[in-house]
Every structure is written in C-alpha cells, then in structure tokens.
Image (cartoon, rainbow, N blue to C red; front, side, top):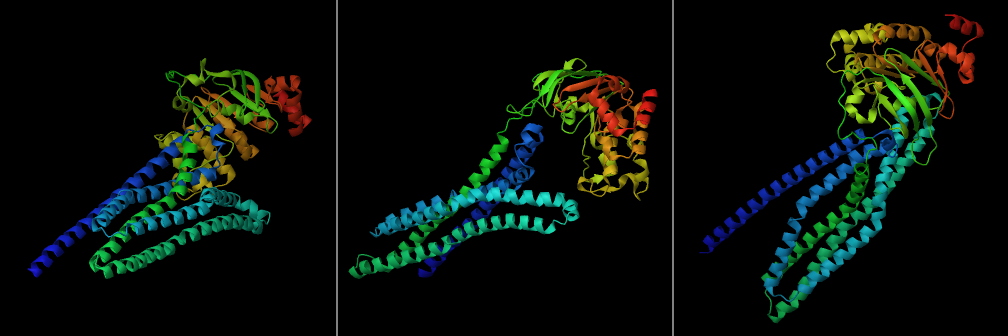
Length: 535
C-alpha cells in the first residue's frame, strides 16, 4: 500500500513538474517572440517617422539621439516587456496559491508573511528612490557617448591634421567615464537587492522555526506543518521579489518609452494633400510668387519677397555671399521646407497640391555635399532610377565626366563604394552624385553648389556635355564661381538679407547690379570680364 501510494503520488508530481517545465518554456518563447515583435514594430515606426521629417523636425533631435532612441531605448522596452510577460501572470498566481495554502494550515503565523512583505517593499522602495534619478540620466549619457564617438569618427582626418588626438581621446574618455560611473552606481544599487533578499528570506525562515518550535512544544502544531509553512512563505516572498525586481526595470523602460514617444508624437510640418493633383505632361516651369521663408516663428526671414520664373529648357543660376539663403531657396522646390509666405508653382499649380512622391519624382537633385551609399558605382548612379539600363548609367557617367576614373578601376561600374563614399575622392564623389541626378532624367535639375569640387576644366566639360541633355528640362545651378554660371539664361543674385538684389543675364547684371559686379570683379580680371562680356 505504501509503495503504491509513493508510486502514484510520485507519478503525479513528475507529471506536474513536466507540465510546469513545458509551460515555462512556452511562456518564455511566447514572451520573447512578443517582445521581439514589438521591438521590431517600434523601430519601424521610429524609422518611418524620422524619414518623413522635414528639416524643421530633424533639427529638434541630434543624429546620435535618434540612433540611441531607435536602438538602446527600444531594446530596453523589449527586455522589460519580455520580463513583464513572463512574470506578470506567474508571480501573482504563485503568491495567491501560497497565501491560500498558508491559510489552510491554520498555523497562526500569518503575521510573519505580512512582516516579510512590508520589509521587502521598504527595501525595494529605498533602492528605487536612490537609483531612479540615475536611471533617468543614463539614456542622456548614452546619447552623449554616441554623439562624441560619431563626431570623432567623422572628423578623424581633421583631428589628425591638427594633432588633436589626445584632446579628443580625453573628451571621449570623459563622456565614457560619466556613463560608466552612472551605470556602476545603478548596478551596485541593484546588486544590493539579492543579498538583502537572501538575508530577509533566511531571517524569515529562522523566525518561522523559532515561533513554530514553541507551538510544536505545546502540541498545537506538527513538524510537517512547520516545513510546509516555510515552503509556502518562501513561495510568497519569491513571488513578491519577482514583482519587485520587475519594478526596478520599469523606471528605465519608462524613460525609454518617453524618449521614443517624443519622436513618434512629432507632427511633420510637410503634409501630403488629401486630394493631390496627378501630374500629367509636366513641363517643369517653376515660379516663385512673392516667397518668404523663416525656419521658425521666432526667427527673422531667411528669404524675403522672392519673385522669378524658371522656364523649361533654360538654366537659372543662383549666386550670393555665404549664408544668404541660396541652398534654402532651392530646398523649397522639393518641399524639404514649406514657404512661410507666398507660393511656388509647377506649371501653374501650387507644389503643395502635389503628392510629395510625385513632386520629387520630377526632380533630380545633386546636393552640396556629395552623398553616396554602400554598394557599387552602378547602384549609386541607379539610386533614383532603379530600372535604368546600362546604357543610361554609362551615358550619365559620361556626361558627369566620371568615365575616366571609373574605367581605371578593375571592375569598372561594379567597383564597390564604401559607406559614405570614403573610398573615392571629393571630386569623384561629386561627379557620381551628378551622374545619379542625370540618370533619373527628371524635368527639373537642381545642382546645389555641385560644381565647386570640380576643377575648371572638368567643370566646363561637364556643363558643355550637360547642355544638350537638359534642353527639355528646367535647370537650377547654385554656385560660388562666376565662370560656372555666367552663361546661364537667368542669374538670381541674393544679398546678405536673403532678398533678390538682381535678376538677369551676366551682361545685364554687370550693368545693373552692384552686388553681382563686386562678386565678378573679385573672381575675374578686367580682361577676362571684357572677353566674357564680348562673347
């Protein structure tokens, strides 16, 4: 009979233990899967939101901060959520089951459990009060480390040129040390929890044995009841300990969620219209009608009362002193920013009535800073025209005067381009950037000071090759060199206040615009100017 009882009871225990193991594995698997899925969705939403930012929204967050928010902050939320899903059901069930079993023993020692829980909450509350400010500060310090590291890696050549390695090492060391000290403080604070918990649990066990021994001596309690009470008490304390440990993770997750919400809550200022105009037979005529622009409501106008028309088949050049708003002006055309006053029209229709994708599809932009992506030369030229055939890619490279250096490479157009184009020179990077805009074959070309990285010979050859290719398009050229723009059909001269100081051809401006005349005389001699005017 005893053997049968042991086998039967032992079998039940084994089945229950196996069921608990399966349930634990499944719960961990599901919790990890849910946490990873939410992390994936959060990263996707942050990336989608940031990609949709205009320049105004992007300036509110540093690049380092955005990287930290989409990686470290999301990971913190993912980890906390996984632990929450694993413990939020398990711990309360364990605690409730333990309490029920304790009440069934009628031991008269329930006050010990209440005492243990009160002490536990006092301990956890103290640790949280001490470490909470440090948790809030930690993510800002991570941002700072990322920012400093990014600045140093980006400007490594300048740092070496000026012999500032030691200074930058010290700057990074300070940011790194600040983060390390903060993390050490929080880690040491949290590390106190486990020994304190063990001390509490062992102390409670001693208290139970001491109290129960008197009751056993009086014959009102058995030794088995005491052992069961200790087991149930440890079960209850462990469940509250799990919840307490989870509560330690919540503050950092709360800070991370606030930082992510700051990004997701930003409303982009550039919106698609509800009923966009569908472009048909776009000619590419761009007209600025009394356009003014400022970056925020508190600043002065960067551009004021700009009026001009850029016609198809003609080149409109923009020149002026540094900081006068040349790049800002052309950034208004693809709606990187929206005008503050006035309007910009494309073929007579306000550009704000077009779908952003449809509008920008009509534009081939070669930015002031040549930006390349990891891949090959061909993939970078095809970046705006994925299905462009090889003939188009080769023709774009030929017009951009990039054929010579591409041909010198062993694998030609399949030559690798590293991230940021660090394995090509500044002039080569700029020519590939120009080729990328040409390969798109848009109705509007924008060259934002793109030719400044080219020598005079390459500049002249490129413009000569480009002219017949863009005869049916509208061309904008922002430049600092008079020689680059003097043959443009229309030249816009901006003064230091962002106002239109002059508009016309080179010869007309030499007669009517003092600002243009000063720029021309500072770059060209009298003989060169006379020759150019004669031509």
